[in-house]
Length: 231
Image (cartoon, rainbow, N blue to C red; front, side, top):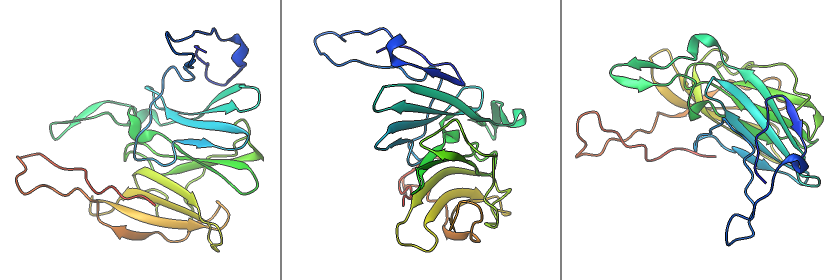
């Protein structure tokens, strides 16, 4: 298949043209026309028994979700949020190009709750706090509730990026969220907060400082990004 979905649209795969892709019988589908994600958010794509969910960010700061039905190949595509215009700007800081939210660092992460609802978390590139929305019905990206912050965590207004979210079975606080947040000292360090119900979060604890080790023979301005943390 080949085609593009519009924002806030539902599209049947039967409307798409098909192609053989050359010598192979593999068919390629373009499901998002303007979207990117970062390697550091986890998970970016979530596969369940009913559908595959893809979270992306657009070039104008849109946070979007795409759902591909396993049974009928139906595609739903919605815009979940648009980050504030005040941070949707490219700029130079200390001689370094910083694209604000218009880059892959703003891409969202997905989680499905045990009762089937979808949760989606995102932030700007250290230009907004972590935001999230939870669907009101199972297996849906069309029924997201209101936008929330990490209430009770102490990170409600802290600029963040690289959010990772996991459901830990058997834990009294099963939802574990790790993110890199900016502190009062200007450092971007890693924090962990947990929740029973995706409504209230535990006070965040600092896991460790931002791991940007610089090689001994590094040139001026050179850094290494080895050592990114994952749950």
